[in-house]
Structures are given as C-alpha cells and as structure tokens.
Image (cartoon, rainbow, N blue to C red; front, side, top):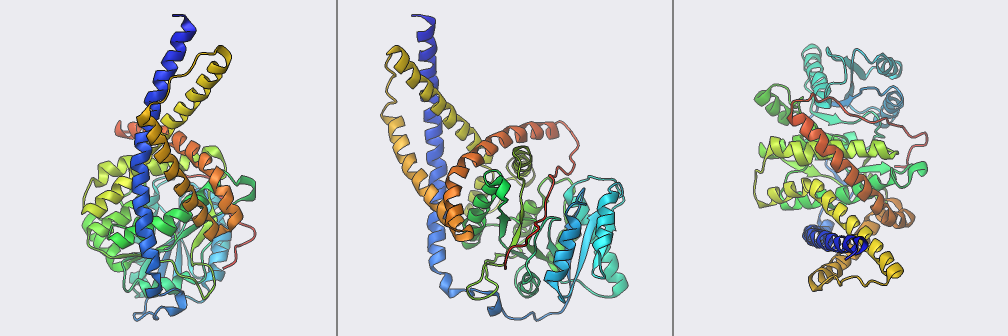
Amino acid sequence: MDILALFLLACEKAMHEAALFAGVGFLLLGAGDLMVDFIWIVTHMNRSRTVSSAPGLPPPCRPGPLAVFTPAWDEAAVIGAMIAHARIAFGEADYVHYVGCYPNDRATIDAVRAAAGDRVRVVVGPRPGPTSKADCLNQMWERMIDDEAVWLVRFKAVVLHDAEDVVHSAELPLFASLVERFDLVQLPVLPLIDPSSRFVGGHYADEFCEAHGKELVVRAAIGASLPCAGVGCAISREALDALADAKGPPLDPGSLTEDYELGLRLKAAGRSAAFVRLASGPGRPVIATRGYFPATLDAAVAQKARWMTGIALSGWDRLGWRGGLAERWMRMRDRQSILAALILAAAYAALALWALLQGAEWLTGREMQALGPVVSLLIAVNSALLLWRMAMRFGFAARAYGWREGLRALPRTVTGNIIAMMAARRALVRYLRLRRGAAWSWDKTAHDFPRHLPAE
C-alpha cells in the first residue's frame, strides 16, 4: 500500500471518529435545547395572564433612592456620553449615579467630572487599576454606605450598568416598583448592531435575543437561579446587606464573573428573582439595556474567553453543583460551552476531511468508505435539529431586530461558532494559568457609545 493510500485511509478513520463524536455531542446538546424550547413555548402561551407593559405595574409603596453603579476602567471615550444620556433618561427619578474609577486612570476621572452633575458621585478607589470589576463595585458600595451616614437616607436598591450602556428612561420606576417584591430584577439586554460589524458584533444580538428572550424566561419558569447580566438589573438593599454581612463586601473581588455568581448566590440564599420583559407602553418595544458589543474578532474572542473562564471553568470550582434538578440542569447548560466548542471543532474537522476525501476520490478514483448506519442516522437527526434551531434563531432575531436581521442571523451562526472555538482555547489556557497562581485583573475591551440613540 503506497503512502497516499495510507494517508487517505487515516483520513477516513479520523473522519468517522470525529463525525461520530460530533454526532453524539450534537444530539445531546440538541435534546437539551429542544427541551428548553418546549418549556418556553408553554410559558409563552400563558403570558396573557401577566402584566404586559410597565404602566400596568403598581406604584412603589416604600420611598427610597436608587443607587446606580457604573464601574469604569479606561472608559474616557464613552463614560461622558453615557452619564449625559443617563441624566436625560432618568430625569427627576430619585437616584444617585456612582461611577467607580482608578487613581491611575486620569482620563476617565476627568471625563466623569466633566459630565457630572449633582446626582453623580465620582468614586476613586485606593488601588491602581485595573483590579477586578467586583472590587470596583465594592468601592462604590462602601462610598454609598458612607453617604447614607452623612445624608441620613437609606438606598432602596443598587442598579448596575456598564460605561457603554444606553439606559432606558422607564427602567428606574420599574425597578423602584418591582424591587419591593423581588431581590433581583433583571431586564433584557439587546445589543445594538454596528453596520460596520454585522457579523462579528451582530452575532451578539442573535445570542442575546435568544438568551434573554427564551433561556432566562425558562429559568424563571422552572425555578432555577437567574444569572445577573451585570447591566440593566437592580438588587435590593436587603439582599446586598445579607451578602455583605456574610462575607464582608457584597461581591467577591476574586471572581471573574461577579454578575453571574451574584444571581446564583442570591438563589442559594433563598432570595427571589425576576426576569422582566415589559414594554414601556402598548405597542412599544420592551424596556431593555442596549449598547454596542465588541466589533472585532480579537475583542470578541477575549470577551467570550472571559465568560467561559469565569462561568464554565472557574465557576465550577467556586460554585460547584448545588440545588435541585432544575438548578443543576441550568448549571450544566451554563458550563457546556467548552464541551460545545470541542464538539464544533470535531464537526468542522470531519467536514474538512470529508471534503478532502471527496477531492481525492475525484482525482484518484478511489472510493471513500460509507459513513455507516449509526453516523448516517445521527447526521439525519441532527440535521432536523439544526433546521429547528435555525428557525428559532431566525424567529427571535426577527422579533427583536426585524426580518432582515433574522435572515442575517443564519450565516452569523458560523461566525459565532468560530469565535466560540477560539475563545474556548483561550479560556482553557487562561484557566490553567489561574490555577497555577497567576494574578487576575479586569480584562476588558474597548467600547463605543452610539451617536444616534435607539428609539424607545
């Protein structure tokens, strides 16, 4: 047997093994996704029994200002515009906007002070940046406690926003009302689509409109914990006080994904949470936080790698497997991203080998071995699941952004897959470094603030 024949035989064996591994993996992941879809459909059919718009909410019963926390490291390019827009959007609402900065980030401090008004408090921490995002939030918490002692007031809740967020004008009244019933209130996050980055930046829109249009709805319906998105959310003062009493500051400065962990910690402490999709009025869009996400491949990979490291890897170490069946199922789904990336890599490898063997068959006349009944059946079933998955992706993207973006969401799936595979490799390397004692600091990406604000 010549070298070429041996090489092609090895390629065939590798293709069959990769196809079998990917086929079984896709079947298991697809079955989980299908179950989530079914629960969402049942839940969605019962929505008529719930309040459908913010004006239908009861007014707050208890007075008290809201504290808006915005951590800002190297955000001079966007923080001024964010503060200015928030001041207009929030209007006369009872709130104080705390912006956390670092002593070695003079540009951000100057930008905050230039945009600040009587409701904005600049909080410059004692340590040079970047530390962790949780550490920056804890600095704002301590300043808020000090302000309460001086002003003789007690804040009702803490609202979290990032420096690039486009806040909604109706969110503070909604938080003031619902935080009296729930310890965590999370609004949807709807990424803005940058026309210059429709495939890299745009893929976030496809993922978030499904995650915040379906996944969180299902988590709430089955009684699992609601991960906090870190933006567009309010946490009751009572819940944060309980966390602070237990472990010092309310957030762990050693956490890579403090927002995600916050939601799980609140659930473990018996605190209530609600994911709220309400329109600001009849026939109007949902009240949501909007903003641009990373528009370049490297920035998107860096951000996804941080999420994977914090949730799928470090989160496993830090939070373990606690709770009932629903909670454990959702934690498994949260942590399957690394495995999903490996399955994707196997599938693309099998596809590349199949194309290579097809070309060799055309050039040499050597027939490729059949895939076999098991792999063929897996391909057929997974193809059907893929068509269903693409229909769901189109439906959610079209509902949030229109039918054109719904169509673009289909090829953007490939972009998301590539980013996920690259991010998984980076996350594993980073996690191993952390396990060996490497220091963790705030790994953030550059942000933009839209010149033309979206309609509410």
